[in-house]
Image (cartoon, rainbow, N blue to C red; front, side):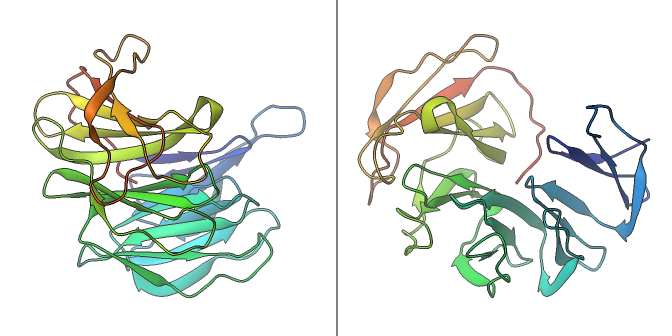
Length: 259
């Protein structure tokens, strides 16, 4: 199959063809992959959250497909240019999108079997949204504004959001970013720059309940393992994150996938 974008999980993969047709392939109980099947849907973009697949339709509206338990596609009126997915500690999904005005919104399920919430604003402006779970069970959302990386977070699941705070900009300014968890409950955020090196930021201490009170560290080369070192500036100015680190990836790739 020819694809322009893929969204991967352990048991299935969703792929967008150059014609915008959305297809998927599943792994059987024997561990072998089956054949590609069409969903009968089209999309501009797709993301995979394990139990939930979300897409931006050709009309820019956001849809979600819950895989387990299997439910039909749910389509909202909200329109988006980018989207990201994360999960609450109990596995309930959270969607974060950026609309045409570069404002962020999020919707979630209080439990995996609950109905979706209404869409709630996270403000902005940001682009290239990314999100994940942090120690303490809250969510963190990253975005780019004027080349600088910004983030806001919750200390606990479904608690109040902290305001957007800057992580400053990598050399050349950030153009895309992504975030993922790292060993022992840390958090890593990588971003690509228009020129110069891409950078990777990580939260290395999993012990604190939220994102308050730590610093960032760095690494020198993409080909080497991370070498974290403390630096003088905190990861935020109005509320410091806990156990943060920052790194520099010296590969000169300027291309990436946002959200």
